[in-house]
Length: 323
Image (cartoon, rainbow, N blue to C red; front, top):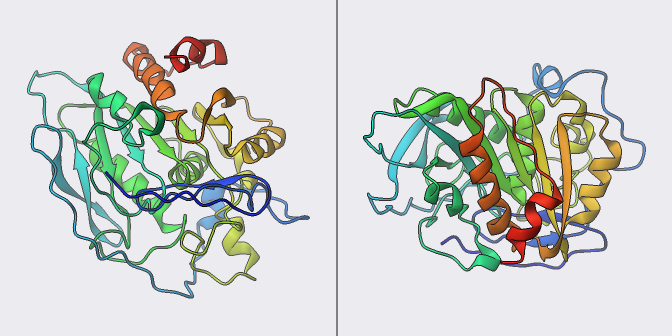
């Protein structure tokens, strides 16, 4: 299982998260700097002619741990920086097209590790509820992670990598290309929210505990760009691009010691009916995952119409989170 480190932050409630060292609630980046406003165009348009300028070259250089063959196959998917490692559910060999979800873990979300061992229900960051339900899972590593080409870009080029993972997964014979979902937790939640703002390829997106803005992440997760370059951070700020989301997107957080401030900021800024915000009572940034993912797995299995029909309310979650 990936390593995680809980870090108490400054004073409000952003959360980082991802594979190695998830800092948990870090209150510095609930919202963008005062006065920042989104340019009058989409995130995809704003990124079109922009090239990020990294001030640090960061790589993981951790080998990819071999998964048990019955649980995952280790594959590579093509991306702009080169082939990137991933874990993928093996072919069930039943001749059917299955729904699938790409999951981005918290902490160092560029790097993948052990996501197959059972974890406690109050901190299950493997999202194993989908796999248990028979949903195909893909855990992609991203640029600069593991021994991948490229360098970590902190929520910029990684958006393109997640889209590349989708393109790979959509061509897998046992995957239904019309039923590919995206989910992520903490820093992974921030990344998948940016992906939802960037592309409409995914059927639905589930963002757990994201930041509204990446300016307040601790150094190990902060974008490796100049701290005075406003545009670099604007293009990594989910709060500025909510209007561009075109597919059902669920922003979810636990109300107990979680990133509720960021969720409330995002909710107040959003006028987009495609986005739903849920602050779940009695659970934390970590314990929210297992019960909600269990509910979402059932909803994905029932989501068989031409267009996504998933809805989610606190009432849906009430019975599950008490277990």
